[in-house]
Image (cartoon, rainbow, N blue to C red; front, side, top):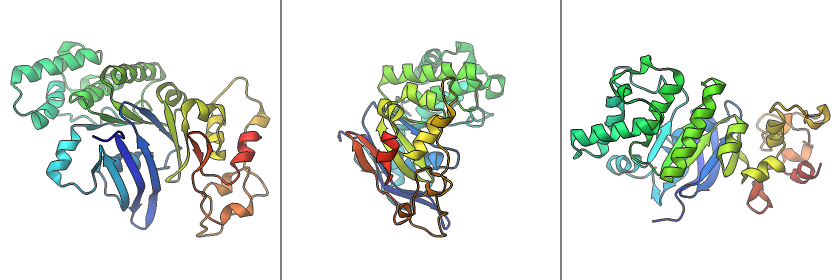
Length: 316
């Protein structure tokens, strides 16, 4: 068994002629919680689906516990799926309206543990409902009878029925009321601690990511632009895009001069330019930033940024 649970190596996903993910590489360790942040359209959900092989990848590899998920046959992939689960953004849309909660939660057991007796399945479903904070009578009801927060608890229960080793949370609280978001986040924290499941938490809510994650990946237009330990990233972001993301979080003590704005003198990127994708929006951009796409460079121990001018960002 490999020490690394998940390895994403030079992953690229194209939709037609459009590259949505570009040579992404990172690793996750067993039991680790990693946050993935970026604005809408940056490729976060595409990455989640590519890891799970729900969409085809154009190049690169996804290794789960040393197994190349892009190369295995359907039967072997099915065996891996019990250890790979996802929680979707829309809790109601992710549940089959024709299946009761009991049927939805029992389905993974029927597929991956067919020898399990009916009474044992019933007991496991009841225990999981209790673990996620739902009453036992919820098993007989249907998704439309629940609130959004309750539906998300059901989705979490379904994902955790097989005690997966990796749970991907794709914006699991973005569609919920603020009062419910904290409850769902705390539930995920509790389950992660109890079961030791590794978690890739995708969100644009930086406060939630900071609360949950040990390490953070920042993605912009399909590229990883910064990777760092959570505390280091929030204390000293090294990429202008990360700095802009953090500055966008409402704060009472922020001063207008602390918010980075695009530089007026930054020249527009010509069509087909191979340079930094953030160039046109960057307060630190210069013509030299267009010469080539910046690679991830180590700016401190375990802290990487894809920026030619990161020293100015860190020390400004």
